[in-house]
Image (tube, rainbow, N blue to C red; front, side):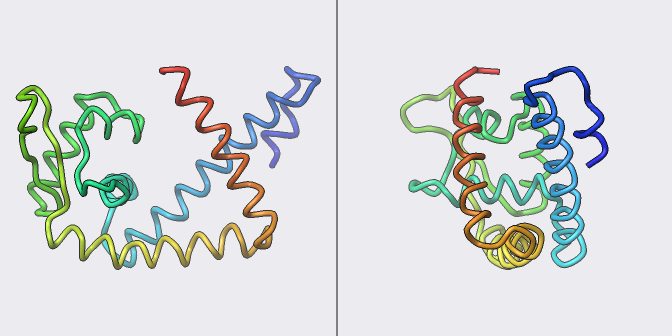
Length: 157
């Protein structure tokens, strides 16, 4: 990675790590997005929304929480949800205890598309990550990424 190696602003290497992570994330996103578009006609950010909803125990997620999790503004997530709702993949519902909150959940079509897209995402992730690093190093990377992600979520930005 030329960007990570040529960065000379941090002799401790942390800036090089940040640059490498940024580049890897961008390239990984592009590869996964290409696979999802080609095989499912599904944008990566739409897949991420479906994944976040599917991961909840309740089967729905508040728009504010969704915005935080996919790192979009509330206006940006509202427009994204509008498009996905028109496509028939998700639907909004009001919170019964707080009229200011809106939840989104998967429709039957959204759940079906998510199931097929998940297989594409898993297969391509396996090829791109475990196929290069091996299972053990991939698991180590997952733990490190989760720890860093959790720390960054607590910054509130």
